[in-house]
Image (spheres, rainbow, N blue to C red):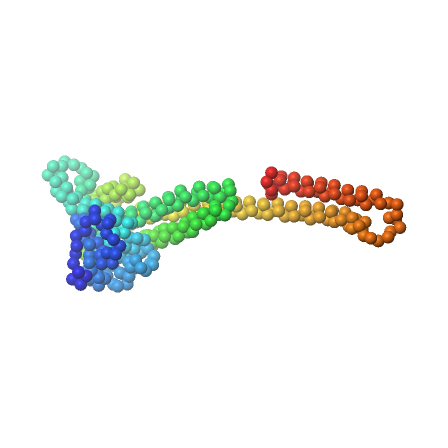
Length: 393
């Protein structure tokens, strides 16, 4: 089958039960402008000829290789590598890798749901001329759609931003209680738990940072954004009119809530020409703000972890200082006791002293005094240690 490059229709309901062993032979799904999906049983050379990209571009999408998040604009395709979303977008179709992956299945379903909007919108536009001829320009604008490649790109960006935001929320729900518990009780178990959470946060921060950097790099270069206008480069007129751009942002569940009416009105007055990238720039800016917000949440979590570490270090330094004070106190008591031990040792020697005659009672008094002093010193040290919390009550 791989040799003749056959195409097999995809059943969305059955995709979830496909085993991983079939992914090697059917590792791509093709979704056209009508939203129909087909599993491709082809090799990489057929993919390269179909979308006209180089082998180095296809290598970026290899799941066995570790490449950073990338959005590349080519002559007739957009190469998209965003975490688990590895896709090739053309002006008429989307090629998505590993369609049976549990994280990719929702993206496939969303593409199949939102890509057919263009044809449906055009049909509704014809109907509106017959039945709704008296509507104003704003209502007629709702029948237009954005270019195919932008709608596919929007689905991918929305999916990856939602995915990373969900992972960040899960990490926050686990990290903050663990840090509070560590603050109240320092133990090996709590320390190991926080260490694992900090490692997970570091890895997640790096993933979010890569996506943010790629979007920022695109926003900083108008030429790179212009390369993503596949419909314009293909010579076909864009289905987006000025009012259609305004409706696109209004219809999008993520973009519509982020862009004001004034911004949409300004887009409606823009005439799409060869150097105009404002439509794509607004799309990227919206998702850049969302991924930047996720990164800020991770930065706040890192600062909270650092503050907790500083607090624990202060606590440990305080206990260390208390131990040093106790050690100094014990050393002073030992010096005091050593004087009485010296006296006791002198009296215990079997050496004839002239002043020792008829004074045997002195030894008893010295031993009794030294014992009382030792007991008093022990009680004082014990009370001091309990006051400082070095020993239990």
